[in-house]
Image (cartoon, rainbow, N blue to C red):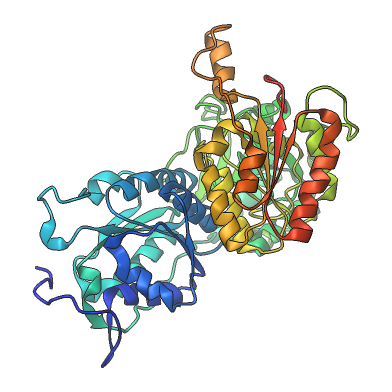
Length: 558
């Protein structure tokens, strides 16, 4: 039974009571939530009313997919779940893409969904749907607030579930009538999240394995680090002349310029790092596991005679492929706390192995000539002119497509969460994630690289950027096609181009219409001046800037 017998009353407080919707907001405040990304709906108006007087910044988005992506990006950058709020039925459906991203990327996120009134259930009410049926296989938990007095408890449980174990998304359904009921204003305490750690046996096993190895390799990834933990990890690697590679789209945890950083491993990887997985005699995964992308479709390093140590808080090792020699159940920071006590003698073989791979990475990442090469505009020229201007804490975001490889190769990510992307290959992520990054760190240089196909999937969120003062630099690489799919098409169906070609509008004019700076570049000779003009608009006028770069088809970063 639920407390639906009590008639809904107006929001507000008296005698220690508040509406459940206001208690939900108060509980988010108590957990330290700074902003929520919303598309409003009549189904959760009481929560919106609670946000009115709260310290939480309410970012009103133009599409639920954009709101969900922003919340997911927020979860990647911070130590708390990102918060999105949408309405029932169509709103929930539109937000699902961000939920899938959070699931596959192991990102803590809570999606609040307004629902039909309790008494209207199972009557095919307007916009009715079953949240558990829709989201049950792609969220860690799906919780429905059927008892108003549990409002604070349910929020605390949702926040805990999103952060505990392998992080991920949680859905909380809010029936329209239930959230208006008056309940105690008491806030449920935060629930501590276990971080695991190395046992004495774990420590000895890893210590012995490293001493035996001549070509060890660490692979870092995931969204469960802190800036301090990443810095300590990097220092320990450098002190021991040990190498580390980045999981696909997780660059920066070990900085781009670190002598221990040897490059990214993922789709479209450069061949040197591709070969490392078989050559190394000890792989230590920290914060991630050897999944589909790292193992190139479950093909690389599948021999169970290979030695793999897996450091992850997830005891189920969901998504793992290939051998497991040893598992250490720990979040990255706690693992690093114990790792740095390991003072190992540095082998000459480690120095040679790391120096060889570092040399290959430096050659791979060396910038192309900054001088224009004439002819059609080129991404190589843009990167060569942009990268030298970037401060050390610059961030890059992007979604999915071959345009992302320009960032993988050249963008100097020098700290944890300086690359924010969708590892589930979700297009449309670039603009929302750049907005979230810019709002989280005002004044910081945030660059997003979008393909022309990806950009229009959520390009309307530039209106959100203008409304709230986000100032990313948006680079739209326009090659008039869905490039990644065209590459697969040419491989499997050569010279039969079908369903991949695009005709695009003037994205620079679109940027101007939304209130930002836009510049269209077709000639390579005009690229340096366009970069300068875009950065000037950001720094002096305080607006976002978009460079619409018209490039040739089939020109790739590598």
